[in-house]
Image (cartoon, rainbow, N blue to C red; front, side, top):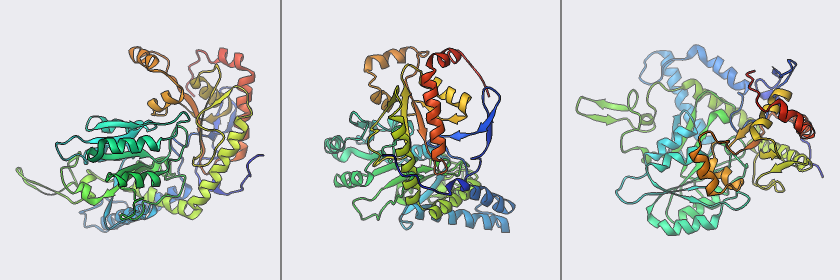
Length: 447
């Protein structure tokens, strides 16, 4: 039984959905973007808000001119808009604006180990590199295991919480995998983490744009201590990310980037740092990006996060039902269960390299997908069952072919007809495999 088709007007909110692009044969078609897990196009309302603000733009903080005061007030109001959207306690939390989720996690990595004792960070085997690499040079990192489908093992999490006890500086977990689309049970995890007197960071890059989320009150066992996410994945691609956490975390120590805006008083021999969040936002802030994020949040709230999640889940169910009927498609994760996941589907076509599949889809049909390891190489290695010997051989040979997958990821503006066209193209590729393998075996084209 096929999933129910929902009729929406969400497509009308997004810029560029009807843009025409050239194919390899010179014909123009309407672009289909199934690469939303990487980044999303902007909302029309966001672009309009930027245009409306632009005549009033001025450098914020410390300026006495009217435009500077106007810009400064708006910038700080946006901080509250962001915090309220995710349920932060604005009396105890601080909202820090950064460039993206990667910078947010890097920033937090400098703040948590302030003693000489052993400091452990528990990450997971399913993390994006941005929630793995920043911890490695500052902490002892251990990884929570995943099962054969790629889902997180809560049993292994509790085992490691008991093992490291009071040495744990943080448990850091993605809200949603950017590879399989699995939604981790973050509130159940938070309850478990707090039971052992540790704190939790949620990498919300894939979670915040696709599903309702709340940090919960600070006295709740299911409270999320730290949250990081990016505007460019939520229809505001103008260079802003967010780190939210207790203000007390950032009150001591110097910021990792010092300079303009980070200090209260300076002599040649003395520095008194500004209070957070300003201490953490060095240089001239990206107010345009902040306003864009605030505007995108307004549009997301107007549509309703529950409505977005419901619609995107219907697209995922619809696509999975069709993919399972195509011979030669290898799906990863659990294609039979659409609960606790968002609109991300990884797959391969038998005997055709993932990079070639992605190229054919783009050049022949104007369909944008992502291929490779999606900045989550250890997780991909697990899902592809690549053994340690193979990995060692690939490390020795920098020219070796990288294993990987093809990933499709939907946004709120995608529709069922686009999925139908995608399926038709996949069947065409599989039916004419020999032709496409020959045509694209050594082709290098820059459209």
